[in-house]
Length: 310
Image (tube, rainbow, N blue to C red):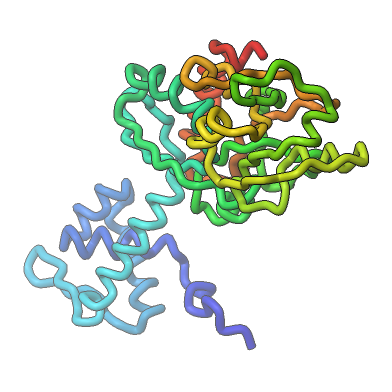
């Protein structure tokens, strides 16, 4: 026999707000006014609840309805349950960016944070000054488990070749980019043979065995020599400037770093398709209104930059 919610299946749940109102007001008349009922209808409902619970619940003392011992025991639980239901069943309020103090946790890599957050934080200051962010390391691509579990609100990552869309995730194409090669300032040219003969620095955010370009090279029957792997992009251009290593980086990053480091930029000496950076989110996010606003805002911000025109 199934005993789950056995009592609730026999109880008219409309009687619970009546109990709560009488308990708070200690008055049938005031409870009836609050609930927009007649006093006779409320008294009839209270009688039904008494019969179901086998307890008087309230007894009259002058003009007041005094709770029984059992009513005192029930009251906080009923009040808490009604408050929770009312809070969670109420329509979601519109998101107001100007007054919001919403907190967003976003999974990123060095690259996606580098591309998105400088322009985003510049633009958002006057539009939504009270919202806050926590950027966390993207544990894998595209933080599927973390998004499904609600541990992060958004993930900024790039699409993999032949990637299959997950039915519970929304994806928005943010921008596309392609790889170029940077080297120290002494190099004058870069042929395919020179590229394959050189040592390479590869950024692997998830400690992958090989980088994204190695997959493309393998399809061409080629292989490069990886001399140094690192999870972070920050120090990499400075290593390249002081060594004979080569590094493939997104063209946007190369353009931003060129004035700061003594590196040269070359075209990739083999064919590789561009990649797309995406915003990933859960279709049933608990912050859907605010997350939808933020996604649209990020997209608008990026489209007004060099990245959006690439």
